[in-house]
Length: 182
Picture 1 (cartoon, rainbow, N blue to C red):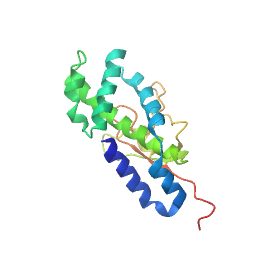
Picture 2: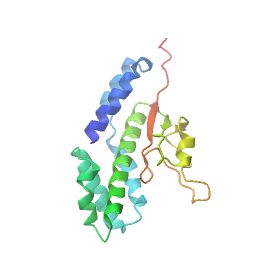
Picture 3: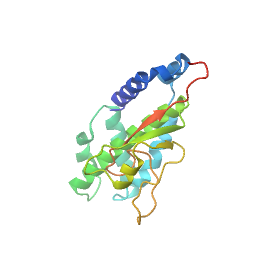
């Protein structure tokens, strides 16, 4: 999944290539995202509240291994179910959410590696889209300071697109135009 996500991100960015210099394209292809990606993903373990910490860490490891192998979230739901007394629906939610978080973390790590500091928030605009996420659609946000994504009256949560449970939103990285480009 990470390989596919990486290729998809690269292809998307190349479609915006008129705004990216030749040197930046080289950096994008050679971007060293591994350590930043790991840091972003490690922070996600604490968000799995329905499992004890050790089981949450194992769920995270399962998701990372499966994603590295190109598996879909449905391929590792059963493994998450075996981590403790957890309903299938909750295991599906964890697997789906961990997949989306990994994609967001990977996109962020690659974008930051080539100088992106902001992104455009996009949502899918269907009946399952949260009101707050719909409000964020099309807004420019900094990678370093995610917006409040919780609904009014709820505990304040800040997250990037695709990082909260069952979120299907995604980030479109923004790049500064080179002073050498027309």
